[in-house]
Length: 187
Image (cartoon, rainbow, N blue to C red; front, side):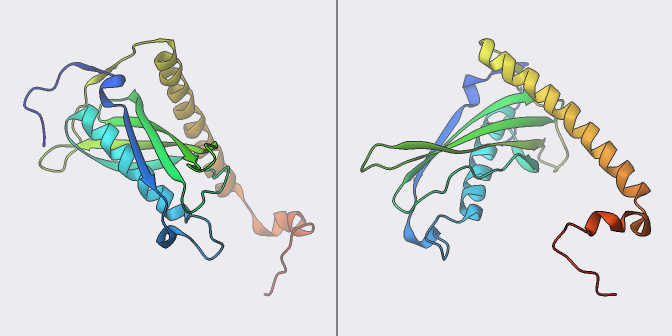
């Protein structure tokens, strides 16, 4: 699938993708709502579609940031996943995904979640490969690109701080934190 001569830049609109699927009873959990795993699978598909279209290569999911289910999705609703490449690095792409569900009987449309998938482009040998740059076509594209830079900075800072806190964590010195928690020590 690798392109012979990838363009130097591709626009955000070039790889914008919408995937719409009817939510059927076999997608429902025991509570009658659509399984989160079904929605995650659809998000992964649309992230792949947008990333691979931009990259001109096979892409794999590296990480998922911000999957918060804001509202449940019901059987019979049409779910649309709107994806666009918001940021590119050398071999990676950040795909923003907005998920909406529509009750076709009432016309009610609800935003169920927004997520960010980091994808990496692979060449035919399975090695990370350079992706085209991103042509920002308007202020919204630019805002999303800048947000992605901030998101990367915050995630790196969080990982560093959490690793430091975990390294310094002494269980005996932190037992007082468990006093208000719903747990008991059984050793």
